[in-house]
Structure formats: structure tokens, C-alpha cells
Length: 209
Image 1 (spheres, helix red, strand yellow):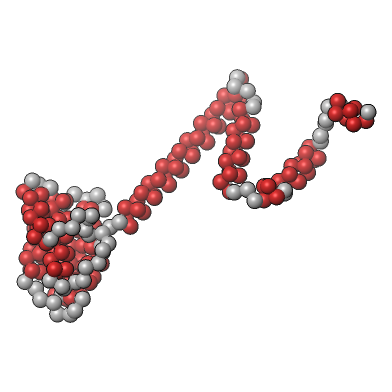
Image 2 (image 1 turned 90 degrees about the vertical axis):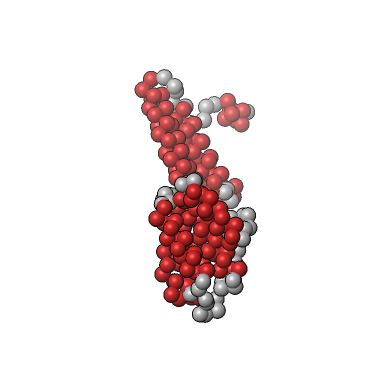
């Protein structure tokens, strides 16, 4: 009878007792082992649910909708920032000189000339530096290395061809600027790489790479 009476009567739990029970509940093994992402998702859902429970009409309802809109906007901004940072990091990490298609130095040189004739200076600069890199590999001045960047090429080739080290570093910077820095190529930049290509074709390595 006493148990039935307790079940039938309304339960009035004080604030302090409710806090103690909540702390006891959170200290349980289930919450201690809960993943951080799941916990954040649960807390956000609970927060939004508490806001919505205030009703959709009146001042409280309007305020709840405003808070929800602000929270969603902040989350969207954070997501876009994370995606841009990830994309930027991935693009920088893939800064190799050569693409997927393997070409000879002559083929890169011909493609560079074709792009230059069309006014595609950025692409022409890229292909001319690739022609330089492939030429150095074909002549065994530098050893082939998949994924080598323009800066790495300039460093290795500059050790083998010290008189051209500064020009090779400048060419690498130009390549990176038009490929990853968003800079537009110019005719002057392309002619600079063309002249360097011609000089390197007759250069002899003084040090083994």
C-alpha cells in the first residue's frame, strides 16, 4: 500500500537533490566512457530542445528561434573555415612539379610553346619548368624522385650546377606562385624560364647530385 501511495503521489524533487542526482547520473560508467563527439552532440541537442520547449509563440519563442539561428550560423562558419583549412593544407602538400602524366623534356617544352602561343602564360611557365626538371633528370644531373617539389628541385640542381643556383631558386618561386599562389603568369616570366632552360641545356654538372 505504501509503495502504491508513493507511486500515485506526485514527486517533488528539490533543486539541490536534483543536482545531486544529475551529478550521480553523470558519474556513471556510461557517461565516463562516452565519446567526446557523442557527448557534444547530446549536449547540443539537449540545449536546442530546452530552447524549443519554451514554446514557439511570444517573446520567449522568438528569442529561442534567434538563439538557434545564431548557433547554426556559428556552426556553419566553423565548418567552412575547417574545410578551407583542410583544402589549403592538402593543396600545399601536393606541390609536386610533375602531374600524373609522364612526359619527356621535349614534350613539356612543346606544350609550353603551345600554351605561350595562346597566351596561357601560367600554364606555359609550369610546362617550361617541368621541361627543365625532366631535362636535368634525363641528363642524370639530378636523380628522379616522385613527388619532388620545385623548391626541392632547385636545391638539388643548384648543388650540381652552382652558377645557376640563384636562377633555379627564382624559377621555383615563379612556378609555385602561378601554380599554388594564385598569381597570373606573364610573358616576361615565361621568357625568363625559357632563357634558363636554354642555358641549362648546355651546362655541365660540376658536382654529382
